[in-house]
Image (cartoon, rainbow, N blue to C red; front, side, top):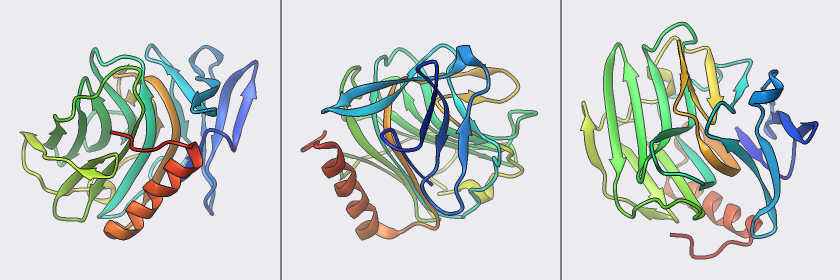
Length: 231
């Protein structure tokens, strides 16, 4: 999955109705309700655009919600939160009918979080340091090698705190069935945990590409956005 805010964004009345994946086969993340569409800020990332989610009800969803099914991988994103008041989901995948097996990558207030539920058992890890601040820009990577989780901020491997369960490394393929993959929210039985802020890039690799490939992707993202020394 490869989404970038300067390519593949379909605007309707200045709001993003579709965000088209640049990989093959391509997926489209869409929002059919006009009032729940994020907007585009043309120069939020050093002169480059970002998709702005309002933290109230904006999100984009994929019609093929279960296309991610690996046992390892990496989620890499360029983002800028406008609030750190509560847990917000940048990217999540779950059944649309209930809250059981799910995969979530979020901004847990002032920290980054991975939370995966398999057969009703929750595994959650946080990256509590450095503190995530509102109106600051970050390049972050959420990773599983199939046996453990890792979180990187600005290319630096972060110490993790175990919040629930174990640092299992469970990934999309372990949490089934899923039919609802979403950017900017956590939508199960009840919408919630809406992300407030900007997203400039979102990449997902399956299986886990390893340290070298992931770091090259981070460096490419930074160069594309003219960003240096993000922490």
